[in-house]
Length: 327
Image (cartoon, rainbow, N blue to C red; front, side, top):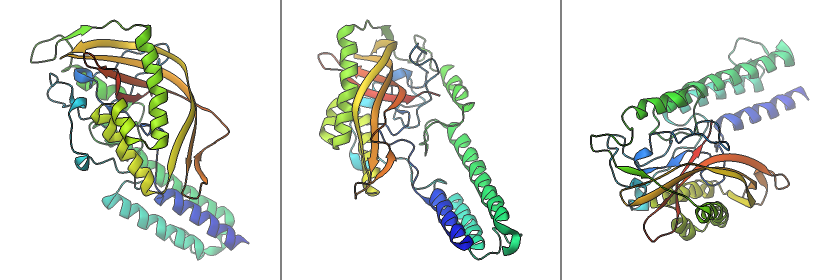
C-alpha cells in the first residue's frame, strides 16, 4: 500500500513539473498583449473598476525605441512569422528544463525504489521522510519559478510563460518607460489629443467583449481578425494553435459585463484609442479531445478584471487593440 501511495505521488509530482503550463485559457490567455499606440509603454490610469495598475505588455509589437511610430498594431504581417510564447512546461525550455527535469527524475526514482530523493535518506525513513523529500522538491520548483519570472518581468518586451511577474517588478518596469515616453513632448513623439467617448462607444466595447469570446470559443479566426487588430489576431491564432496542439479546446459562455469605466481616450496619427477597465463574469471551461474537463468548472462562474484598449480609424468600427492584466 505504501509503495502504491509513493507511486501515485511521484507521478503527480512528475506531471506537475513537466506538464504543459497554461495560465488561463480564455481569450488573451492571461497575458498582457497588444499595443496602445504611442502609449504602449505607459500605464493607463487606474479606475474605480480597476484600482490596481495594469501590468506591462508581455507580448507587443510596439517599437520600444520609437514612441512616434504609427499604429504598430495595425501593421499586417504574415502569420508564419508569428511565434507564440513557450508554454511547453513549467520550467520553460533549454538548459534549465533539462536540469530540473533530471533533478526531479532522479528524486522521483529514488522515492520509488526507497533510496530517498537525493540518496540522503534510506527507504526505511518512512512516509514522513517521503513527504519531507516531496516538500523539498516543491520548494526547489517554487524557487526556480520565482527566479525565472523575476528575470522575465525585468524585460517586458520578452514573452512570458505564465503572465505577469512578481508584484514588485511591475511598477518598476513602467517607471523605466514613462521617463522617455511622456506624451506631448519633443523628440519625434506622436502628437495626441483628448477624445470624447459616448454611450454608443461604451455599448460597442461591451458588445466586443461578448463577440470576441464567442469567436474565440468557436475557433472562428476570421471573426477574430475582423474584431481585432492584426497584431491581436495573431496572438489569438497562436493561442488557439497552442491549445489545439494539446488536443484541448477552451470555451467561454454566458459572458456578462459587470462593471466598466474609461481609463483614457485619445487620438493620434489618424487613429482613435480608448482604454477601458472591464470587470466581467463568465463560464470558462477547457476540455480535452474526449470531452473531459481539464480546466475550469462548467457549473461555476468566474469573475475577472482586465484592461482592454480599442482602436478606431475614421469611418470604421472599434476593434480590440490590447488586453492587459491587473496586478
